[in-house]
Amino acid sequence: MMINKEYFSFIFLTLTVFFTVLGQILVKKGVSTYAVGNWMTGKEIMLYLLKSSTNIYVLSGLFCAGLAAACWILAVGKLKLSYAYPFIALTFVFVPLFAKIFFREEIPLSRWIGIGIILLGVWISFK
Image (cartoon, rainbow, N blue to C red; front, side, top):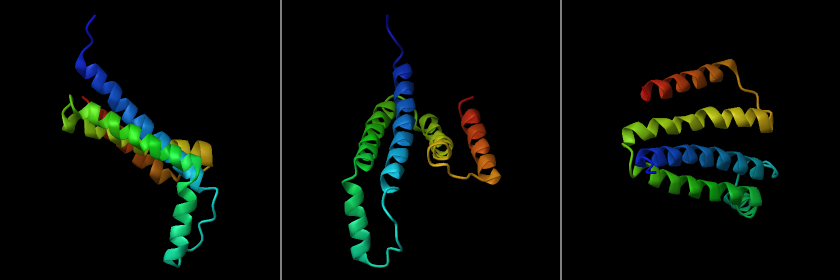
């Protein structure tokens, strides 16, 4: 049984969104363990980045970013960019949703309205 190449491209497009969202959540979890401070000096910024770069969640998030990039390359290899790229906007839906779930972030009504508009835009672009 032969499967359409666009089907696989759509799977890779979906995986791009998945790994992008997962990566953002992991990085946020990792950097949330450190006090941010005011970052008044270059030394403070470098120490913060050094601490963050050795955190397993941050490293896992960066690995997910690499997987997302690989999936994106595989997706756009067969799909039109103008078709595939609007799908990436779903990250703007899922990241805030999971930020609310995992980090208990408050999301104002205006942002939910914006997220709804994004969903409408993605739906229209795939019609």
